Length: 117
Image 1 (cartoon, rainbow, N blue to C red):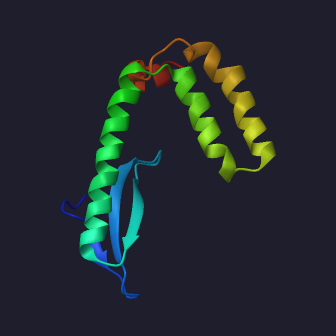
Image 2: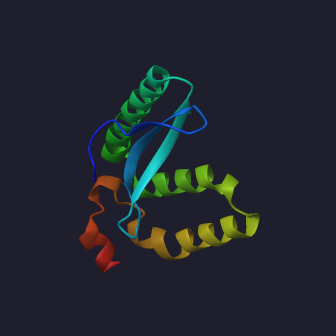
């Protein structure tokens, strides 16, 4: 992956910044795109967004139970889904995943834990 600011001027005159969020399940990079009318504004919003990500990741990973994080993810993501999809995901979570990982902290889940599951 290229390093640098990842800030570009678009054809429509706006500035675009990309914030790296991690990798998807297929090992492709996942970005959040931020837009502003000037370079300084987009750089400022990019830096703020990166600071928020690092702070939230450090506190969440160190103290959160998997079950709490899973329910939070479910609630946060539910607005993008149909009601039937939400119910299906909730049922999978409660029937298959939580009986195994309910008492684990998020920081304890590694690739080996996932493979054993």
